[in-house]
Image 1 (cartoon, rainbow, N blue to C red):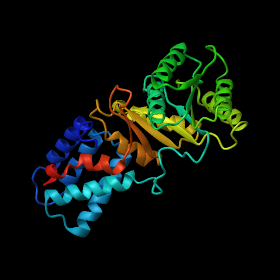
Image 2 (image 1 turned 90 degrees about the vertical axis):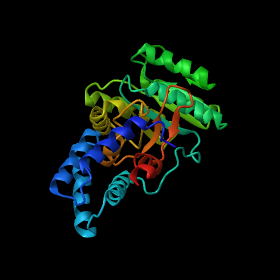
Image 3 (image 1 turned 90 degrees about the horizontal axis):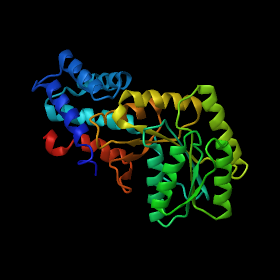
Length: 305
């Protein structure tokens, strides 16, 4: 599934690991140090890397590593276990909730508005009635961009003038979704990392006004991150998590980056699942994330053997 989209990440990751092992028949401290350097260079982050290396060391002592193939399978298993933060495997969308309310957060430039447009198009194609709310009223460009995407996806949009109260837009969006019997409403929010208290207050206010219409809204808080920014994406995730309860993540620009290893680090550190990945510029280039496929694509069977 991800073989083509992850070529840059896969080649960089696999080549680094291959060089780290270097054809050695036993796992020495030097080999483990080399693997550690390779994982950090793949943008998995120091904390996540140390978890993986420590687990590898324990398994090597227990299982007595024999060859390259066995070590690669061990490494794949350890990375897969770190990705397993949503063992219940919740669906991408919970259509038992109507309207299903999704609040989308993230800084400017990560592809937040584009992701919303692609999500709307994905759902509209499934026959769902979708409304998007332009509650990022800080930038006129954000409202204009979302309007273009709404037209492209063939869905309704609720918007107000630039500078309007974002919570007011969110309220109107959810109220419209209820009135029109919509299946899903997707709310765009402020695309700036201002003072954390300001961000928290704004997102809390948006939540509170939406709950006046739909008491358990939002059903999803989706954080959009740019995979190509590596560890900067993790820092953004930490800041947004401090301001609101993030329930899922979408990673954009995964196809154009050699830093796809950041997916592993962010999931491990945040304990929040990735639900969507952007793998291109087209309207259909947003995919529902499959963690098993992702890990398998990093460890292609033909490469291991």
